[in-house]
Length: 145
Image 1 (cartoon, rainbow, N blue to C red):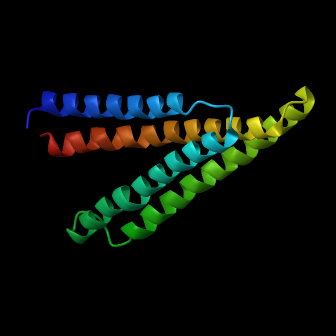
Image 2 (spheres, rainbow, N blue to C red):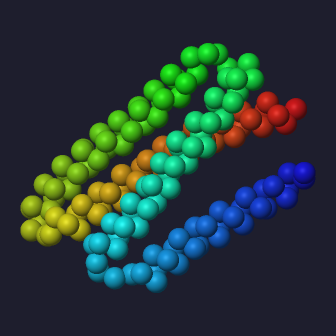
């Protein structure tokens, strides 16, 4: 398959997926914290499903094929746990600072909770993209030659 076609299909699917998500968020735009909480929970669940079902299965298949050592499941599970702990830590740090800020500004803490959830999700996605880019580059070097 041509690399340009792969890049084009990936670009279009990313733009359509992001555009569809933005459209749903714009259509359901209300001042309801319940709707925002549901949307954040849904997107977090999708990311969790990708980690558990897609990213964990490929290293296990490579281990069975003999490309990776037998302790691969321990490394994969440990990496996922470290990622969850990092997000938990970010949530605690950002959440405590947002709570102090909301108390000093006498704003509602509910909107601060949603801000914290969105900020933690943004940082988690940014941290996710770094190793994903490394994996894409490494796979290009491995399969592209």
